[in-house]
Image: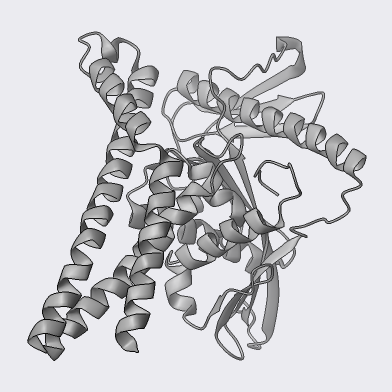
Length: 376
């Protein structure tokens, strides 16, 4: 019976892997790698640093994706042989090892399958993530900083490069807001499922009576603009202010007014950047963030019109999307997917893969007919 069950699991795994390879289109991926390798070897590549970074980043990503698929395919092809040898020799330890490999392959193929669900218009883009403290006073500011660490740790675990563009520190502790870029393909499609309000319940470290406090922080995820995006911003629509960068407790204060704040007057959108020493670099980065926000605003307006025509009243993601309870018990629970865990320390240290994968699958299942997979 166990052998029959194993055979069925292997057959299902092989079918899933075949579907993944079809969706990813490995021949096209190999052609793209060859083309990018030719571009990367051009002697004048780094004359345009932005383009060079795009080429090398895309090449590294595709090489990694192809290597990942090929390794999994080889392991899957070897697995039936491992079971046959274990059965023929009646070797219990070899059989246990083959079972462990099967479990590991099912997990790895499942993760890869999630990647094929990222087929929305902007899913392949890099991401801009903004975290803001909401209701809850100083606890909310502290919670926002905890979320910033959670997401940057998640990026570090995956080897994803990221850059913090701007951080607004709260007076007593924590942050009012922070914006960072995740510079890897499909960052937007992956992280967009994290958008919404995150709720924390704990004994407040800032309450001298040790009372339980509920606090909230909001996460916004938008795609980074591409050269093909058309966002025309007249100079008259902008107010640009410069100021000195600052950090917590007065640390990191520059001696020149290098930080830049740009206000888009028609919409009231405000963006800031203070991570570079050069005012010119900070201005360019802030403009890129502003363009991304305006692109997202336009996309949301277009989607709202479509939803109105369709009679969409789902409000599918709602506002509050995940609850983190540290007292009186330990539990992190996603309110959309019902994914949950009692290992709160691991989650807050960036181990959120299962929540993200569940969110991507949930989004795919709940998309309206004919609706592309976009952020909520």
